[in-house]
Length: 293
Image 1: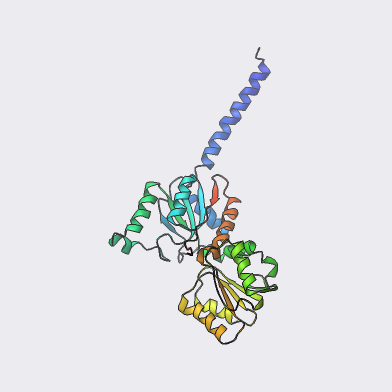
Image 2: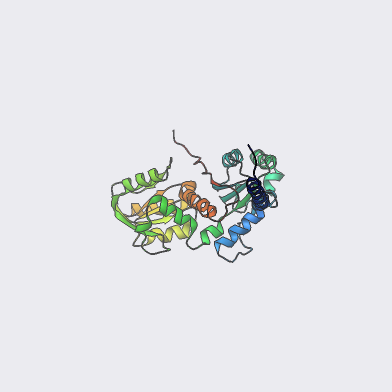
């Protein structure tokens, strides 16, 4: 086939365009973990302070990012799945090293075997772990609560914007618990209260906000059931049990920490995908660790 000057010009233009685009793409896809986090911080829309647990927990922030894994808790199982998905930056809501501040000194000094195995895996695969807890909660609206309301289908039942209290169509405590269990795919949920009582007034308290906050919610006149993450059993659980024994129309639906905030980090992954387009952003759920015989 004879190549005409017009065809040669077209080919030249295509090649020139490709050469022009390639460096731009390479630059965009060469984000470091630090640059990704800076973009997250900017998008949150809050003034970032020093008093926060939202910091790097492992790895070198200057490492180029191949993919971002967003999760509720950076368990070793999640880290293994992140590596399989070619994600080397893990954005986790909860701690990685078994304490709120992720302090590792005692673990290292005692040569803790569980910590050592996890740390070795992180180092072997050059993973970077950053926690996103305080400012995902402080964002307006709270990112965890947005995700949880969507997962439960309770947006339309919220009494006041920004409030944790809801009013749903009347149902029994047993049916409410079963619905929460099914929607969130919970394996080991627990309930305190009479399963046959009719309820309409709920409060949602994901995670572990502490006894005072949980107590104040359950004590409210417009709250019959506290749908909660977790608590010390000598605090909120005992308080709820005593309320039932006192003949009050009160109950607890105890989801567990991971199920109570998991949908909030799924929401976080979707939010990050809207402004972080150079690398894949994937939600990796943390497994609920409990099972019943």
